[in-house]
Image (tube, rainbow, N blue to C red):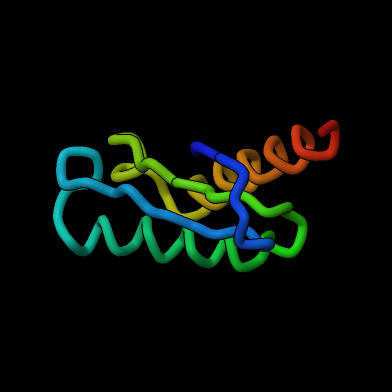
Length: 85
């Protein structure tokens, strides 16, 4: 995940899920759906940030539970870092 402050006053999500990283459309859409769902669950905790989720090839072979756990760990890290600012 990449983050940058924004002037929108709320957190926004961007997705970068390419063919090389995630394979066919079904696999790419699954990863994007999980990322959007995870973002909606945690966006109220985030400050005004633009967040870009960049999928890696390992996401294709990971289960949905593993992807959710990875996303939660990333959100936790972002929240902790932003709390210090």
